[in-house]
Amino acid sequence: MTTSPARRLVCLGRVVGVWGVEGWLKIHSYTRNRADIFEYGSWLVGPAERPRRYELETGREQGRGGLVAKLAGLDDRDAAAAEVGSLIQVSPEQLPALGEGEYFWHQLTGLVVKNLDGKPLGTVEYLFETGANDVLVVAGERERLIPYIPAVIRDVDLEAGTMRVDWDEDF
Image (cartoon, rainbow, N blue to C red; front, side, top):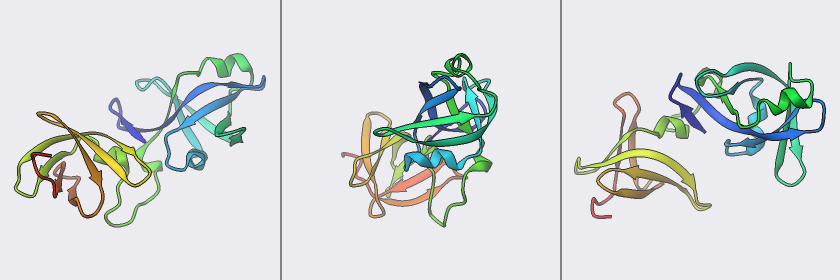
């Protein structure tokens, strides 16, 4: 999940095609469990600056790894085709509550990363999964890949916009 800078909306995925003739959309989900995108009953679909609100009528997995969704108001293939390429966003208030010390990726993006000595290493540009653990991509005087694991991530202060890591500046 990423955050749209236009209104601080959270991007959950995008529309990648149409399915059938009754207005169904093919969806690419950015949620960790891809079908979790269907847990959000109301989507903002369209360009980041001017999305339109749609109610999710139904959604399901389709074929190998695919997702399809039916949105209220999109009732034919032409209407659905107009949304191909659109972002699927929600407001941050729609996200589920997290436990202490848990964060959504969009909350970590943009944080200033400092090591235990207080040396700034850069800013979190984005994260990605490796299978073993998530990885922070930190851009500063050079790009660093820092594993997002408890042994490395010492604390996150969203209000201050900082993250403290146990990471040598030479790595």
